[in-house]
Image (cartoon, rainbow, N blue to C red; front, top):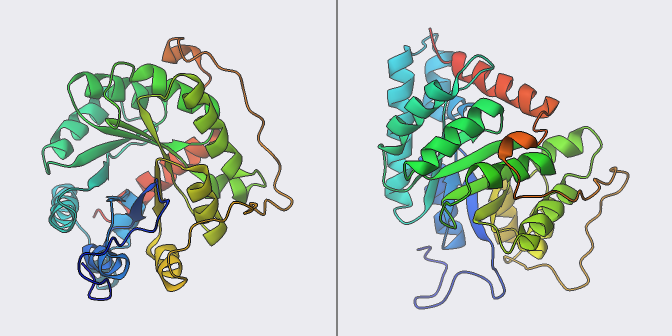
Length: 298
């Protein structure tokens, strides 16, 4: 615990219901955030963040790359370091997946990665192959985090594909910043998924607000009571510097000119294959993660 937190005091502000994760790939940065906040509930990683790890960057800048086995070993080492820093927190580990990767290939990776540490959530892309892999993974008792979510239909499919899972065994990660980038109000998607899951009688799926780009993203996710919020270290540092404030009752999210995303009435009792899960941002995100992973490999 940070030396700045008086012994015996609760480092979490009153009224905080969301679990807070840091989005990154550097265990040293994670330790620094824990020292600063006095707590941290977990960590999300992905191939792009691993490629930005200082050791990986130094190796690449020196003209060196990894073999496929070496990069997997490197990722495992980072994850195990994170698990030591956050022994009671969740650590999300992402499988490699491009558009050709099959559900069976993702599942095989997921099984291996899940064995690395005791507190893993395995990240699968919210595609047909990713959902099929997650459905089987959950049946085998694995914990999963469905990533690259950009629509309410995708979140509905996650609920349906993992039906029967224990609450907390499954996360769904909408990427709000990337929706903002193309002029849509990403925070509407968070509110819509939350409303849909609540209407189902509190889904077993936990809502994880991801791709947080601004302090207002963070504050509004707090106000909405998102189950989990994962933020870059910089935003968590800013929150700490401001005294870890909670949003006031009159806080209004400044959506500006962002186009609203309308709520859809979806039947979560349907099979997951009945939902239209296609989204161009999911395809682009999957391609970017694959490219960043491949950039490390000779």
